[in-house]
Length: 67
Image (cartoon, rainbow, N blue to C red; front, side):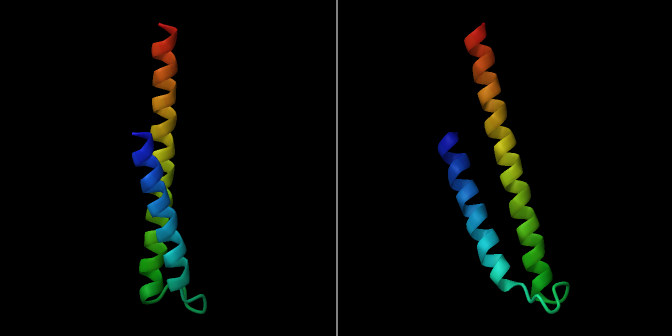
């Protein structure tokens, strides 16, 4: 599971980097820039969810060790 979260996080960071280059900063809410902004936001959400999953797995493991 740890390897999966690391790989998906790396893919999300690469997507963020690629989509930042696609934004037209003169008109960020027109055309392809909107798609790039939505993809950046979705990638950030995926990173946050993966970090929550990783943290919950660590907490679950600690609870099992204590019992």
